Image (cartoon, rainbow, N blue to C red; front, side, top):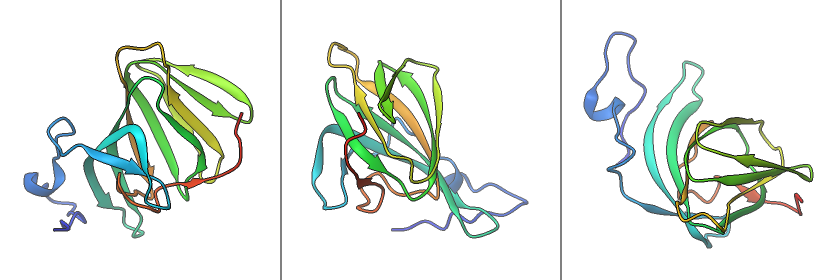
Length: 149
């Protein structure tokens, strides 16, 4: 059931506007063809509508060691905040190691790849804040593109 997350300027409905990212259902992440991305899961967080009708939301993503999001783009911008583990972001052939506490702004339609370091025993966990927001298991969350390395 889709919840009305438009909200009001006068109140917060805790049943709609407060979502615990640790207790949500663990869902597989998929690509645009519906293929499950091995070793990558997410939990849906809260989302809501901005005054202009754009949906903004946050999800928690977990990647097992060695799991990767191949080069892809998103229709909207997003911010990533690493909370555990270690990973690598690849943009324009440049590799950037990401550690807990690191935050990254990824503009809309910027080809990038991301992966959890294979040597890590702790899964890479990060928060993904998207504008516009797309659900963790939505086919239109991302589109694969050519090599980013």
